[in-house]
Image 1 (cartoon, rainbow, N blue to C red):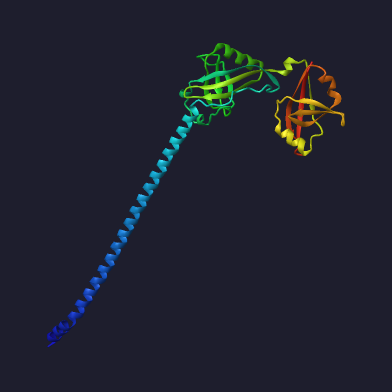
Image 2: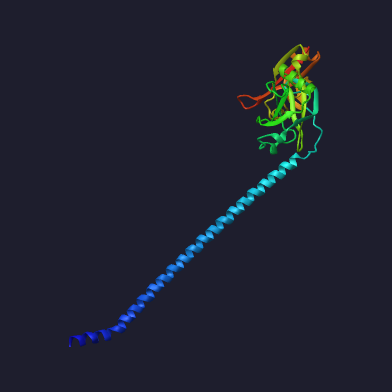
Amino acid sequence: MVYFVIFAVLVLSSPIIITMLILDYRKKKKEADEQRARDIKYLFSEQTKRVELAEKKEAEDEKKRKDERDRHDKFKDRLMPQAGPAQAPPAFYMAATLESMRNDVQVVDIEKLVDKSHLPALMVENPVDLQWEDYNEADNKAILARNIYHKKLGYIKKDEKLQDKIIDWMQKQYPVYCVVTRVDEKFITLLIAFYTPLASQYSKSKTYILTRNTDEDSQKNIRLCDVDEKVSFSYDHSSKKYAVIAGHTIGYLSDAIESIIETPYVAIITGRELDDNVKHQVKITFYYE
């Protein structure tokens, strides 16, 4: 009887058990499908990220290559002969007058430079610093050319007469003016001008600070003038002073200079600086006999 009851219970409950098993299976299958979908989505997302990163890196690399090509092309353009107005050194430079000049001086061996990073920025009219390498074993008269940041450009092409003159001026501590006039693939061409100090040409010198020039017009005129610029004079009868002219009036001097301007003289601007009131002061130096 007991067995019969157990059998009857199993027979009656089997559909319920089967249904529960089916539902549990479907639930687990659904969860597995959802997890698989999440895994696929994650993998696809990661793959997409890797593709995007690879594309981004390729774009960055291409930009670097393009920038490098542009930089090279720009450098190449600058290495081509550059047309421009005839180069002329200033008449006065560092209180000295022009004695002679050469505008065909070549700097050679630029292709042998270890560091060429500064060359693309080299332009016509850039100033150049000259240095005598008396310790140079290959040539004790070698003249090194450097840019204003002391980066090596190369050496002045061997020319004993020119080298001797540069060395002579350096030993005398006379001013030498040097700028770039042309750049091509193998050479940098310089203009080198030699100056003789005015102090060596005239027996006397005297320096004055200009007055009556704090007004707006005078200050504007002062800003337009340069140190080493030659000045002239015009007597102002109303003030009984001499107006100092550098294109326009930049100040006045007393009639005490009459004794100087009656002799052979040169007067140039030798100083321009701001005073405590942020006004430009100008110094004029007379070189005279």
